[in-house]
Amino acid sequence: MEFDDDAPPPGASPWVPGFGPGRDLTIVEHDPRWAAQYVVLEQRVRRALGTVALRVEHVGSTSVPDLPAKPIVDVDITVPDPEDESTYVPALEAAGFVLAVREPWWQGHRLFRHADPRANVHVFGPDTAEPYRHRIFRDWLRTHPQDRERYAAAKRAAAAAGGHVMEYNARKQEVLREILVRAINRAG
Image 1 (cartoon, helix red, strand yellow):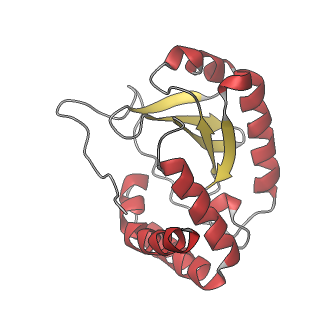
Image 2 (cartoon, rainbow, N blue to C red):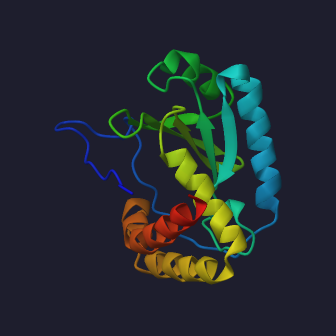
């Protein structure tokens, strides 16, 4: 089990000009409306991309019942080649998604933001590990209440420390990875 924490190459930034890490670290109790918001987002993605969207998944804390979360729906999209932005960026932008992050050095990752409903939409290729990890983690937390509560406590503590979302993510990372490694090992 390895985690790729590589910094951007010298002189590179993951942020598209005009964007940076969010500062809203508000954690709220699980909202059952998040599932319906995901359905709206999935339909927009599928209409925009058609068969270019090989897979669209609701991931992250909003996809786990009984888990507190920032009220921002996380969506993973798998496309054949994230480097070929012409096959998906214009279509997603026309559907109201805004490209905010471009990280070709980290699993080809792209991140789009969506305002209504609020969402972070991650784009990856079919041979990357991160979307699989997201699904394994989601499914584990759905069926393991002790780990769900442990992760919830880590999220609340990370948010209470303030700062921006990248700092928040770093503060909860140890607990997340410990749970994820156990879930992956059990999944085989």
